[in-house]
Image (cartoon, rainbow, N blue to C red; front, side):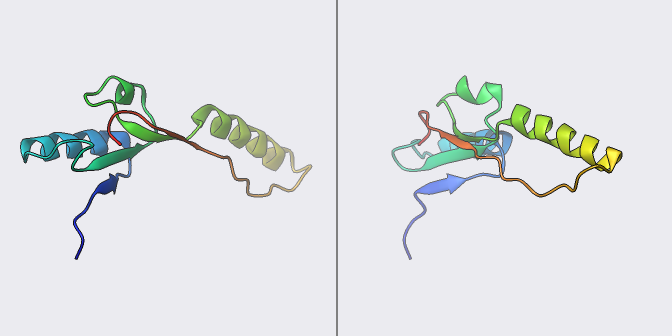
Length: 94
């Protein structure tokens, strides 16, 4: 079976822990193993190596959630599920 060459973690904190464990095990990031987090918290850009991450645009999600909640509480409009695009922020870890 092929060796793992990339890991996508559920969030940036887990990614940082994974990178630390991989470095301790002698892996080189990203040469041996690319690591990508998910949520693009501020410390991810200052971590060494800087962490690639999926940015969720939390302010957009929060704003749309409030709009939807107001519509539900007022009962004036039906609320439909929405998709809010996210961005892949590439940094040193990938």
